Image 1 (cartoon, one colour):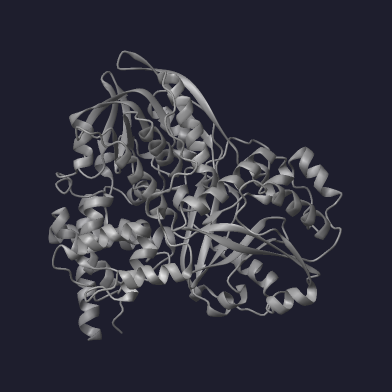
Image 2 (spheres, rainbow, N blue to C red; image 1 turned 135 degrees about the vertical axis):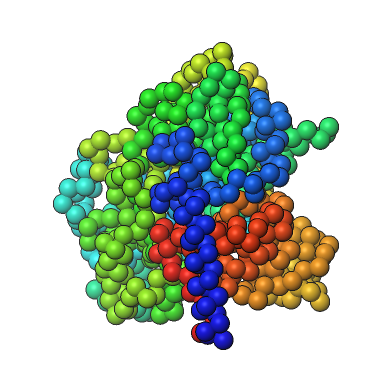
Length: 631
């Protein structure tokens, strides 16, 4: 069995490599696919060279055809990260005719490379960003209520090694926004910060207040902690275990809101469609899967392309210098001892260099991050060996008896934060707040307002989207009709609020063809939208995958029909968490490619090309070498 499996994999790779050489054009093409939610200036005009492969497979993309058939909207949003998608949903709810285009896949850039936290940002208090922290805490509490299927309370512990350290340094950091010589924050400063943090939750707070513990009690609860601690502070924030799927939920809510009574789609969105230039007829959009281009016009353009806002503006004929992104990297570990040491909560602390870092469980894996380094926009955003060494060092600082090796890393990722240009300001002190820049562009004989988003963070996407939508409505002379503050997101509607409720939901949706384990996977992946998936699965002959119990042939077909799959890799990184958890095997790649072949009209050659493409993305950007399950 081992020899047959090895020969089969070799044959696929040799055939696929030949195809890859014929179609890729250059080795940087995978970067142009995977690096961001936005236009990349290095690949503008090079659509034909991208690894987006053969030009016959995208003939039936109804989302693209919907834009081509009616090439105008009141608003065109460029960028399908969480802030662009949130603005899309908000405008659709107001009855605005809105279109969104994304050059890669949704939530592919910084939105998909976050620390998976929904948090107020306690450390921003020291920067004086009180407005941002208050808004973030309020929005965290809202997301716990309106997106409970993905956003969960996260118990967080800060190990503290001194009492008064940092009291003199903190005012200087507050006034100058410079790090200076690293000096740890002691219990006094942390207590003051947490007290202020709690005060922002007084209205509508949905998490417990902070608590201080002495050394003995802290080590009783977390015995693997560094025995040199003097105190431990515990407070609650929140985590989002699947930000990519939350982004999809927000997008689909927008599409649904824009569906008019006469059947016309007032909210249209598509991925793998890139802004390539401005022509006399409008904004040129190029399909990254077919290579075909067409022009599109809008009354207002919204640029939500994150760290690439300036490059997007350049593509539209304007030079701006708004952005100064920083790179943040993370690793994901399969390490049962470290998982147990965290005891179900996050460890959030200041490392010896002054950087705030984190260690916390994500299911049966442990996420460790993050770095904060000025980004070189000419280079791939990847987690480096030096950053991995840094992560191992910080784990050793908090859990000195736990040994971690590279063999336990199942996934790594990096992204560029969409921060404003900051010149000499240290990365850790760059504002995480946002602003909206307005300019006028001459496009297709009209003067078109262009609103560029500078900054923004995951936690505040709903409030930010509301702000951006209000600015757009003002330009259009329209009034807001609906607030999103209490509006459930996607599969968060009627999601069970207790463990008993979740167990009851699973029992109610178990059948001869769907066992309890499968029902639980679907509820975790889709929230209450899993009912729609289950109906789809039951409407035809389904075949469970042999390589994983978490997928079936019809579920993949559902993803194609409802979630705009463009590439094989989309399934593993942004429609499921299989890549994040290190569960992608050679067999799974082959089985999924086969399941996609029918609905996407992929030839055998195309399937093999997509397998190679997925392997390349996983290896170069995530440090994953795909292995066979068959030994």
